[in-house]
Figure (cartoon, rainbow, N blue to C red):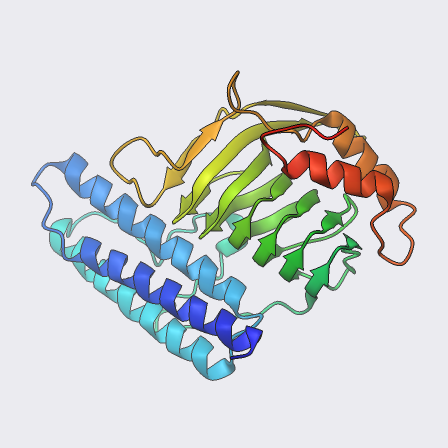
Length: 317
């Protein structure tokens, strides 16, 4: 099976799992209280919006027929939700999924009055199958989506000057990913292991099927979501306008779909016993090294930084 086929198959399984979760919500008979109905509406809307974003991001590697099939299923789910909302709150329009713009980036909803319309990115910048490299994603003005896949033993740097609508990462291990740009839409990471991910700003952060990794999110990044993941350390990273950062305990919330009703054991934030080794020094050094990369090779300094950042149990000299 080719890697493209495997990626498509993995997305099929992911979509089917998320669809089943939404269908379970749609089959729920809530209590008669307005709070119970509001919670059901909010949970269903959140799942629908997240799955819509997943499908939009997946247009980079889905065949047109598959895109239409997923879009049709989303349309059916949205119609079922509208029916549920009408039945439980026939006079309320407060929780309209099809008409309420959840944010400015998603104003062109997949759920239209007659059919679902996809608007694929005008240009997808793809970086695939990189091993032991210092990769700089030099996005062009026309590029709206970045797709990284098959990344191993690398440092990936996306500079502040890059213009990025959304980012998708699949199959990454033993690597340091620094997204120093403003991501206008979501960033979605799948199957990331023993790595460090730094995000300056994104509309939404999602991580699936990942483990043993550090996640540093800028304070402007919204909506952190994880699923089927374990041993993640979250920290908050404050950026200034130049090349300075500060790393602090995570102050936001992380929604773990595997623990919807209680505290998640899949992630923690930095404290005396749990910390991240990505600091201001590593940030400055990666920016410096990115300005003088030779043929994508990892210099000795870059290797030292990578080994230090992805290690948890011991320090490298």
